[in-house]
Length: 400
Image 1 (cartoon, one colour):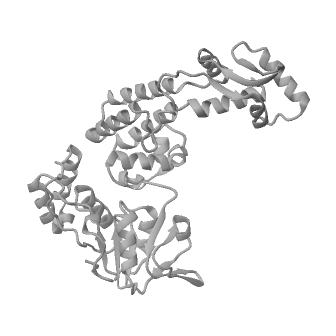
Image 2 (cartoon, one colour; image 1 turned 90 degrees about the horizontal axis):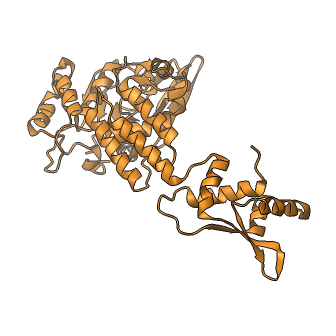
Image 3 (cartoon, helix red, strand yellow; image 1 turned 90 degrees about the vertical axis):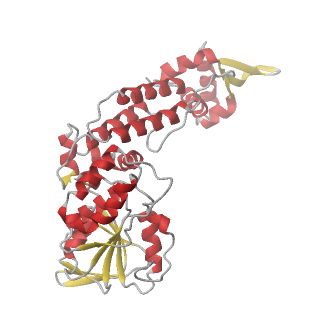
């Protein structure tokens, strides 16, 4: 249905003013008629007269004439009782209806049976419900977009309710859950933010065995990329990036650094270490669960380059080290990963207990069992975050 431009503009301004309102409204929506026409791009006298005739035919709006010039309109008003009509006319919904629908979706998911990560899902849904009840959004989840909310929660449920074969390509994963092959790829950014809320820390698709298509390597330190017939030196200070597509033609990679250090926390610790490594003797790479780009780097670096990993000391942090060891063709030694007690630490979730038990049963992680056993004895993760160590105290290896 084609709507008059002035009415379309009125609806646009009204939605901007009203769409986030979930409280009871007490005042009608009013606009200056001449300004409304200007905003709608109606400028000629003929067009403005036609718009006035259209408005006069609509009983759902009130028109207020200019004093002493009653043939001209001064203000246009949408009464409260006409707001449902305008919604129907444009196919939109009131904020109260949108929020109610979004809360219904949260309730439906809360009634589901979660085969994995039950506690995390219950906590996430409770947090979203609390935010929505207060008419607030939470991360990628907005009460104003119930259809998008339902889609993103459904996709997150599909990702987290099964065990994926490590290295599953993102498009294969998308078809495996009965979606279009590009569905997960299209919504990757929002889903990654959702996974971070669900897991309580930055968690890429790779943590579940799904290899994303836009994998990017974040690193600091000197690299020489060798191609057939030529080479390229990458020696930018602090942080550089390489996308997975750039690895395709690289035959091998060399570095003047004395060691490789993979770092779990990208936003803080990686940047602090990059700035502290004044002599650039350490090739520092940001990674949690290793992405395709990180795996490509590990494959193309010299085998004799010592590899250390600096991560959090909770079950997830040790699990990341385990996965990096699986992907690296060289031994990977933990760096500064000592368990530290904390009086205020929360007890393990069911999922964390499962991960810790699996790690302690893994002979490939036997050299790390001591700090994990300390954690198990304490019954909590302790002071596990890298950031709690603070800014590096040394301008170079070993940094602390």
